[in-house]
Length: 540
Image (spheres, rainbow, N blue to C red):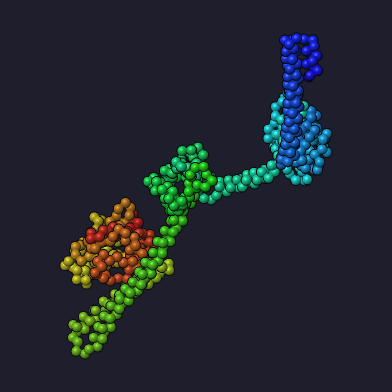
């Protein structure tokens, strides 16, 4: 610089020297800036190369270590790069060993894969999540493929990129799930019980075949079906739902109805479903137990009847003992009194009458027991013949008069005999057994009537021959009018009074009327008396 200054001093004056110095400074500044730019560009280029190398390594690491298989193919669908997962899938340790190979070297479906890749190259449109099944090491393997076009910076397609995921576990799980769903659906649809589900608005959203058959609905009906369409008493619906919401489960016996309106008895089970459902719903199971309920009620009634029959049997035996003991005591007592030597003829005859009367009562009792036994064992026989009923009626009337005198009721109870305008009616029946039935009805009427009247009569009506015995006695409650014809049954409306009898008279009467081709019925009301009617076919 000193030399340069001296040289400048020698040739230029001071002003010129300043201009020259300024030019040199400017030149040096430009050179410095240019050198700086070069240095900066070198630094940026070095960093960019490092960044590109880093991204390339990162991409390679990602591609090689993802569990999905990734592969790049050229325009001929040959591998130009594959990751480790793809190499492992195809049985190679080194991915580079696959370069230049194609699907034709490995898969039966290679042609299909080739065609799809060529279509991608031609159209530039990707194929997303295509599922196919392949055989790998002798096992079925399910794969899902996504293939996209591989383009250069100018947008020109140079091949394809594929990503394959092994979804065998998911597919097997899906197959198992579908199988379980199919089994559950078959079980649901073919279950012997009616199964249904209600949504939060209590509408039926799902029901099996048994439900539709039980209630009589078809698929088109189900859309608007609610709980009120199923309940005989709709007011119970709200109570049941509230109970389910509170207790999570309800099991009850309830009256439901079919589409036709026919009611039936059902066992209803409801359960609240919350877990695994988007909305709260109620699942229900219905079992038609109409027959079971009726059978159960019949069993209960049969049990009650058996208990009642056992009690009545005990009462019958007690009554029988009393009924036998009373005439026997009279017979034994008055027989002993007949041994006395100082008896007058009048007293002796009176005692003999008492013995005979009680002997006849005892024989009547024994006959009733024998008849009952024959009816129970179906050994009773009748002798049907044609005869004029008027004499039999007169005999029954005389029997009634004697019974009133014997019971000392002739002054308190009036006997009425009612006969038709043409009294001589011929009928076909067993004279003896019919007389037995009529006399029993007369005995009952006198037994249960302390005052008022007893009417006996007969008539022809609507081709039938009717015999009736009416009284103004204690009467029979409505609920007892059928049971009085059952064995050992006795109706006593006055609990403070004991009526004699075995309790089998009406049972015998019903059995005899049935054997004679007729029937016996009663109309009665407590405190208003009773009317027993015998019905036979009239002879023309």
